Amino acid sequence: MQKLLYIVLAGLFISCGNNNSTKNNLTTNDAAVSVTDSTIYPDEKHFKSLKQLTYGGDNAEAYWSFDDTKLVFQVTNNNWGDNCDQIYYFNWQTDNLGANKPMLVSTGKGRTTCSYFLPGDTTIVYASTHLNSPDCPAVPERTDGKYVWPIYPSFDIFVADLNGNIKKQLTDYPGYDAEATVSPKGDKIVFTSLRTGDLELFTMNIDGSDVKQITNELGYDGGAFFSPDGSKLIFRSSRPKTPEDIKEYKDLLAQGVVKPTNMELYICNADGSDLRQLTNLGGANWCPFFHPSGNKVIFASNHATKRGFPFNLYMINTDGTNLEKITHDETFDAFPVFSNNGKYLVFSSNRYNGGTRETNLFVAEWKD
Image (cartoon, rainbow, N blue to C red):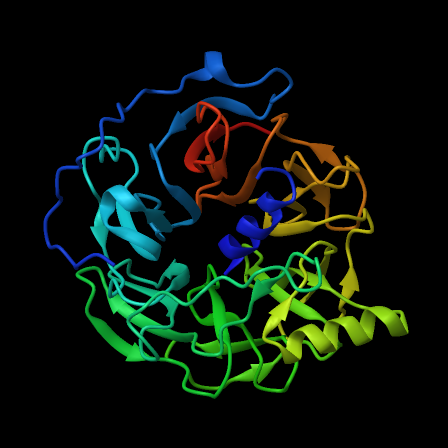
């Protein structure tokens, strides 16, 4: 669901296929061009090398398999027959997505979001609206001039194998259930749900049992990830404080939408204890992910500008000190995720897109 957030945030500054068991040739004329370290922007000192993985469409929220050989991601790409987000996976080191379509692992129906590999790398978890309708649900227009994004009540969380067969439905509670990510320990899933009437974080076992509420304060808590040892959670939240902001949040939520332009990062133990605000930067601070050390967090932010863009990647210590700018783009960098071995960082970017709105995946070889 964070990708829809990107679409809304992108609007501040700009801006269903069948399951196949084999790769299909694309009809696009896009050529796969390797991006090398010579095209890393000045001052991006943490990137030893950079490789572009996708070439066209809107590609986002790429997450590593436990063995770091594969990536699962969501994409809207008309050349692939997808006009609504669907889930694919590929071998990031060997597959050429400029020439071949990767494996579709969602149903090709409805809208999907937030896919993640489960332990063993033979199944994934993701959210989908396909049980409600095979059609793509509409993205809402502005509400009273405000940029908003939808909280689809038809989202539920599913487990599928790598051939796209749904093996299990993990949630069936009325209302929004999505944004599932998996602990590196392989024992827990964290997700966002509207089941209490507000958008809160919950955890559950890998099989969907033992559901526990983690957060309970008013506001949209989402985009959560576990620390490398599984002991903590990092997430972004909009926490309205003034009477006016509280009323606006509740009124919009009653319409099935939220306004995502003011968000900060929060950190807590995996059981919800010791919750504290990590950033107080202003603007939209989101898609956080732990550094392999567990002592830092990387995230996307537009706090450095008053016009709403660009979005760049930043890193901060978990005690709130030493904010560091990681990327130096003029448009949009977001969705940073470290590989399990700590050697690589995958992220989404508008860089090198020829002035279009295409968002592609990149992998950087990381150096501290």
